[in-house]
Image 1 (tube, one colour):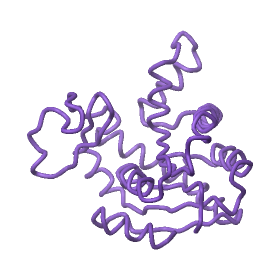
Image 2 (image 1 turned 135 degrees about the vertical axis):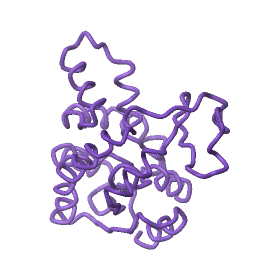
Image 3 (image 1 turned 90 degrees about the vertical axis):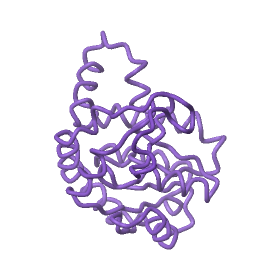
Length: 220
């Protein structure tokens, strides 16, 4: 798979962000995290706009933001970055069928269809809840704090020194809802990749990070 645009698809806790970061470094690509784009956009948004405020409520509750809005933000960010990036690794950018269709149409104009592919990272609901319930990030740059004993008692981020927090989105009841939404909305995306002739692979996400990365590289 000699791709210029690679989508990593998986449920909450599958490690797609971590794997995308590793893959981007390996290939010299830009790691594009739609979750950070959405978070930034809502932080900057004018909440007097009732539709934006309504979409933010959905997002906080673990539901997906409207595909048209996410696709719009996706295009804006890629447009700003495409001339500085030799390629993209996308994590979380293929959530719904309509959003994915719009994103793939746009990317095909830049890279052509044969240079676009995807890898699904498989993970059970039980493992998703387990991983996310223990997840912490830093306030400043959203660095993930590994769920290992040596990090259990740290209070500030070793990367930038900012406070470490647990996100509202990582409460068990919200994770279960996010997993349900993933199954409902993202399986049609995977089917679309396959039926439309895009390169699509899958790997077992319930392995150590280095093994998942090995399998992703082998699939490419």
